Length: 195
Image (cartoon, rainbow, N blue to C red; front, side, top):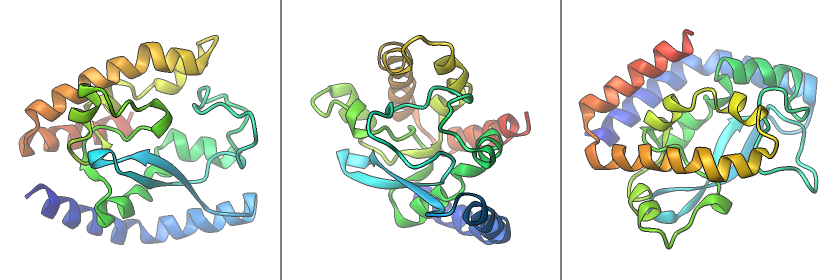
């Protein structure tokens, strides 16, 4: 039922968002050049990596760049990128990840491989289901950028403070997930997007 729901809603949303997404793509091409989509390896179900899709909001990566974004004021974020991030529009291409079966609408947010310990029972449990575009952990840390911006070492703060808290929330979700719970997360996400 969950997969059918994912396919139905993601397909519907992509149809509704086709024109806005095309417009964003044209604006990104005109203002930034290069590629419109940002692809990054994330850990999927059963620890299988996949390429997550987002609209590009940062300048191309350079050697020595931190693996985490240091908040909304990170100098790597472009002008149009700030707007896309503020309204979460950079996440829209992940609807294609849902169609492809890499992600679900609701589930644990997928993590970059460098932060995942496949030998950990907690990680194995979290990775037993498809990651999601949104989830209880995403809602709990919707202001993650602000938390990272206030840290002297954003990566260390993420590894030691934020990630363990996210994992606990994700593990709880995996153990008690339900269709009604997923609908609640979706409606709470819509509420958070409205401000």
